[in-house]
Image (cartoon, rainbow, N blue to C red):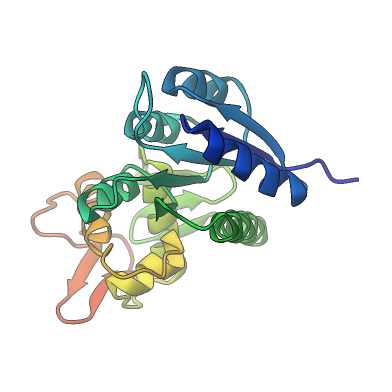
Length: 238
């Protein structure tokens, strides 16, 4: 029998937490609730979780800091932010810090559960693809091990966030193919919501700072004006 997926809810509204816990348990998930940011961070760091449902406004450590700390950890935990902060700025900030999805309050419990299930399916599919593509990828002076989730450029190890690795891995699997920002969001982030393309620009710039000799004149990740971005795959970059 498969072990139940474990979901951590960090939410100070007990009513919301109890409703979500009830719905998730009905779907077969093992659910733990933390009512403060400090308790949530402690639980996050001390156990493995299939997913994290995270409020932004919390007593103690706030949700954005928890998201930042989660993405600094070695293991990858899918994150859905739920918050009354519905402004585009907070949505973009949460996504740039590494959240996988964002749902503004008030929200439908059924929609949130559906998003959690979709996110977990996507993560499982990505893990399966990584196992299928277990061989190392060498392109443009970049070497990627999709199983160990490590990357090198010109023989030097890269320090990448999980999302930066996913983006670089996607580019490396499709060298010389041009993708728009929305296509990259759909393929790498899994979002199909408009208004988040800015986070792609941010991650492209961060990758360039790490893999380009001169980020101001990139030779690997190129901008194709009016169309999007591509990884130039023609041998080692000069």
